Image 1 (cartoon, rainbow, N blue to C red):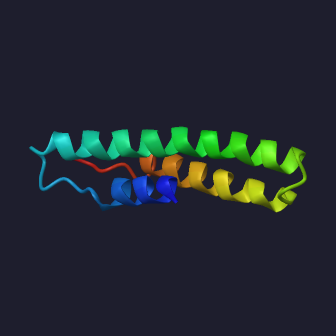
Image 2: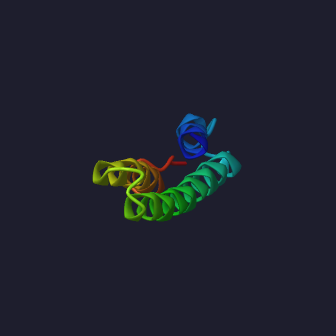
Length: 80
């Protein structure tokens, strides 16, 4: 949930104009934090799948979140 919230913030931040580089930087930082959190989520998913507490399809959640974060960092990055 925390990762989803951080990525939502990354997508909500838009620069006001070409002079607002701080907003673009903040969106990148939030997407980077979301990418790091999705890596932690992937490791936790791996532990819980190995312990047979979760099924293998739970790997989709961190992979999807990482994909969304990478999209915001590259293709959908705010332009100035």
